[in-house]
Image (cartoon, rainbow, N blue to C red):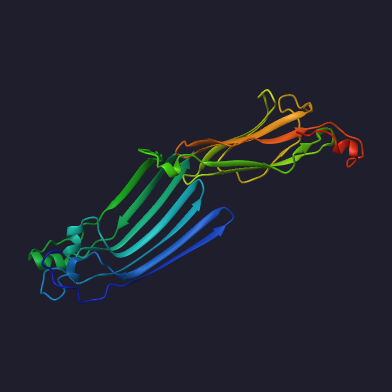
Length: 287
């Protein structure tokens, strides 16, 4: 504040926060004690002012989060009230109690209620300042019941797209270039998609020579697991005919940046004789 004297006291407090997890229930306990830094008397500490000295305070709470329910109980001692002006004239709540209960309804709605009670406040200092005997001890105290409905939502506003964030980086790798579906042989597909703006969704397609899709993998979020393919058509479950097939991945990031990978090639083949390493097989054209 302009024109105030410098602070000549130390502002200190201690705060403890502890969390317990029992199955799917989270229990949060906190406690705080110290000198209330809200009063302006620190700035006027070397003057004889009507402002009161700093008030020591204490507060603690217990929160039980058992989704979809949440319960909270809080107690505050010598805590400042809703009116900042009252605090400057020495008015603090002797005791304040809060009880909260709420429930989530789906992903975006929350309903609940709170009960707040304050004990009578000490008006002696205010009476001394004003010179008026209020003959009451209830200034600023209250009981209150609050009923509420909350709606949670988010939105993304994109004004421009930096060049370095233009498209995701995508690629696909295969564990083998040949698959024998009649021998229950499988190949591993390793999809990769990266973006500084996070991957939102992706698709992996296996296509035949004519471009027909014989297998699709789709996910929302980043690809984190390898995929398996058994060489069969997902449309009818039949073993695919011999030939060369392509595997590609396409991905979108959170800003709708899009990219598609270069195709990886895999050849579907029928059963062969046991002479796997024979010259006859080795001479067979694979590409």
